[in-house]
Image (cartoon, rainbow over all chains, first blue to last red; front, top):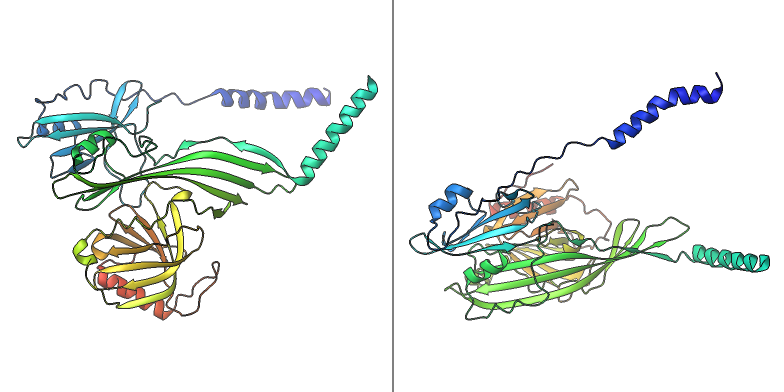
Length: 121
Length: 289
């Protein structure tokens, strides 16, 4: 066996392993979004209780609970709620959207908007 | 033909040698866009829908979403964005990292009256340049946003109008202010006086350490807006967190001598007394290593 053959015989499995490892990738996480998450939102019909039941605690509330907001990001499947405000001084990642809902004194949705904070790519 | 090739080769050699020796091969740094902690929905001028005396808080929220920082009583909102606009770096024979880049900072401040209607609004956009050598920020141009009008923690008008006798002062202290949104461009560093009063900590800048940001800020942080006081691992620095999202790094120096920027201030008994007084007045406990 020549020196070259010896090197190739020992290196070949290592090289093959490296090539396979380089190609290997973790399986992509399945999209967790819900396309119809916000379908229930309708001015004049949706109540504050409905909103909190379906979306959970708001990201922020203003003027008592007259105005409430929820932050969302998006994947291929739809919207995902991103939860609560970070503690002061902690880094806050800005998600894609914020749902802003304005309720009347009876707690019925008067006006809403899905604000784009950072466009989803 | 052969002589032409030789001449061209010689010319190329001269040019490349000159470029290498002068260290002047600039390579562009591509813009990275908005930082992860920054919104991108702030336009390049004050939004036209904001009309003092007409626009309501609800209308502002429906257009822009929740602010990046706000007063406890929601009497003011601040929206800000920070965008990396790229720059250039120099390739040189000494392998020294030399880079220059630009951050574009936008800030929209809105004050509301007691009826939730916009009382006042102000917008600024500033391109702030930074230089790096060996990964150390060396300078900002002075075109960064000044902090003179960002006294967001000083929202309690009744307290501001009071004459506040000083209970303790530390003349030659350092303090930095980090704006919400994060990033190197959001930090301002000053040397100045710290004063403790019955109801607030006053930070009065006498000079700017890293950035020339006229007018130099006078900040007033009421104890009730403070949320946490943490000792930095690099004692005797303290980090002060407030409800507005601003973070202050404070180095107390009660001694009359002015230390140089890189000199560590001794953890003296006088400095510790000032910090103990701050804890007693604010009701916060200094935590950390």
